[in-house]
View 1 (spheres, one colour):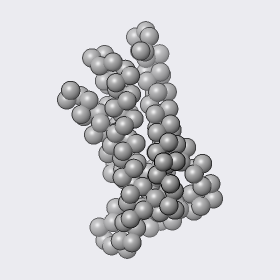
View 2 (cartoon, rainbow, N blue to C red):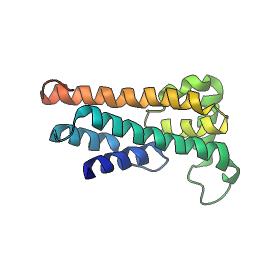
View 3 (tube, rainbow, N blue to C red):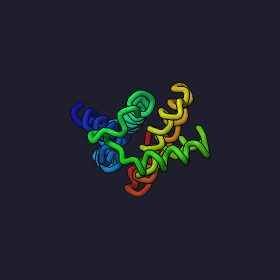
Amino acid sequence: MLALVGLFMAAFLAATLLPAQSEAVLVGLILAGDQPLWLLLAVATLGNVLGAALNWVLGRFLMQFSDRRWFPVPKARVDAATAWYARWGHWSLWGAWLPILGDPLTLAAGMMREPLWRFMLIVTLAKGGRYLLLAGLTVGWAGTGPIW
């Protein structure tokens, strides 16, 4: 159970604007083989999507404080993500899994008032797909047999 909590926290933090690495935790737990793969994928995806949802909330409600010293995102990153989001709209959320750009995109989605239902749907598919691909590559590389 502790491993699942650790995976959830790593995935949650990795999706926020804080630096964290959930992929290494997921790969380590897959290789350990102590948990069913479907459960690891579900926990990692849930944590990562909820972290992205926190970014959406920050963008939606807390951007009024972006000029404050404690605000976690530099203005340049907010401006770049907002411009990207303004150009590509909700389609840009398929890039929510990307390193560096993905987190500010989810923040920009909140700023641009993206409907939460569409945000959650796209982000869940994008982030879940990334973890599924990573799991498939890990199992294939490790030669551990069927992944389910």
